[in-house]
Length: 355
Image (cartoon, rainbow, N blue to C red; front, side):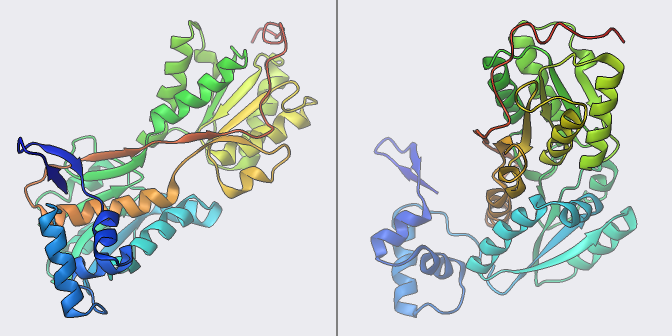
């Protein structure tokens, strides 16, 4: 999807919006015409296709009327029941699928046997264009996909061996930017609250660590606090236990997800301290509930809907260009400022009880 200059070298990417504008049609009409979907007059379809060719836009293989299998991991299903992160990812994915005339079929994948059955079924079903794996982070399961002839794209997960393309938020930079915001407010003792297990969450830990190292901080390993699940009540309890055992030896909390931030705020308040008067709190996700907790939560906004939409686009690219190598796409995140952060009080981070 590039325009070539006089030198023959690519100068910039052509957007579908540009083709639609030149043809005087909507983006959805241009997309349907190029994907082979019904509802576009033959004369108009030909005009749009010719315009796309003249602009060196790579026309994707027709997917209209075909199926894409969405394999949802057990982690994704649990998250969908608890929070709106998965909901918004699926919303963006479904909107893009409707636009392209693609049928999205959701299938749960909890075990290796589930995946083997899904892959075998999809391999022999000519109506299946490819597979999307949502929040799958199991290297053993990914190994089973070797030799699968149809494209696979991972959503909100990545393949460390780079056998499959993937779309995730840029988790490491998101956490780094969040920590830098707190450092800019004068905080030096920044607790990091997380649940270990997924590579995407480890990237958030690394971003927090990057920011502290860059600020010149030392000896901060004792600031990592782990929970066994993404439940606010667990975060509340571990924060209260920390304060009871060590005193208030931190002035800020950065959490690996908003659900933990909600619990951290409650834990700090139940321990007799205020947010943000005594402790600032920042989450990562920016779920809708973040704006309505008390106080409203400052959070890194994860482009959830865009993750879903980009994943389907990546899958269609792999269909149209069978020789493309797997790619890892990371979407930028931005900070949404609310009332849960404030400048650190002078000297507040040095008055704590030794463990």
